[in-house]
Length: 95
Image (cartoon, rainbow, N blue to C red):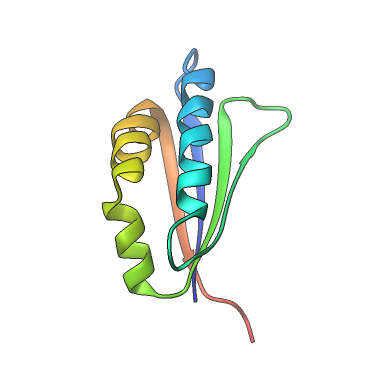
């Protein structure tokens, strides 16, 4: 399993635009084959900061996610363009 934790800080004034992109990404990503979890959180005391937690069965599922039309439209051409900063952590479960 592949786990990904992503933190975005979006540019001031673009918070709701980013949130709308995430509203499209969540159901489409969850419907993907091999996606175990896709949750977007918004930091309570900082509405510019979003935290995403994702789980995929394997590398092939992650690559399919990153090639999907919804990822390209709402992550790559959406939220990433609005980001002031982006931190990505690739993780694996501790067993």
